[in-house]
Amino acid sequence: MTFTQTYRDKLIDTLNGLDLTKVDQAIAWLSEARDQGKTIFTTGNGGSAASASHFVCDMLKGASYKQDKRFRIMSLHDNMPTLTAYSNDVDYHDAAIEQLKNFGSAGDVVIAISGSGNSPNVLRAIEYANSIGCRTIGLTGRDGGKLGPLVQLQIHTPEPHMGRIEDAHMIALHMICYQFMDVK
Image (cartoon, rainbow, N blue to C red; front, side, top):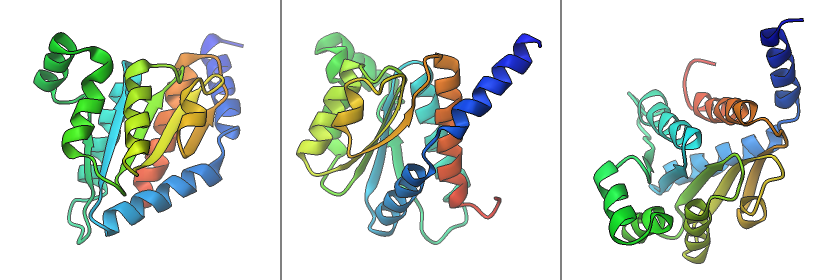
């Protein structure tokens, strides 16, 4: 068996472990947020930040374009000047939380993506989001880290391999997005 076959087979096993009821719950929460004019925020680091940005793009264009009801969604790490200003002048661990202090309010949804579940900046953003009455969703890997028990809804990928964790997270995010599109 080749490496690519092995990777594919392990990814299929990983995806078979995805709790689709949790993905469906996330879809319901995002639908409610859209219908109530609430904002959805995403955050993550590295590959998880890339997945968060990709999801925002999919929801802004794919799930909102030509729709009567549109999503209000933004990534807390996509404004590079703001991110680097807080990181340099305050602390990187505060870069997402400070933006939530500007834009977040009760009833909004904050989606944190973290393979390890232990990124301090992500944890602090979720702690703050919980404190102001946001709904919090975490896409986690491995053992869920500290993020798992901190969020109200955990979509957990119990897999040690970061590549397959990121793959599963992106597939879960695509499941969410495509629920709102005409293309299934």
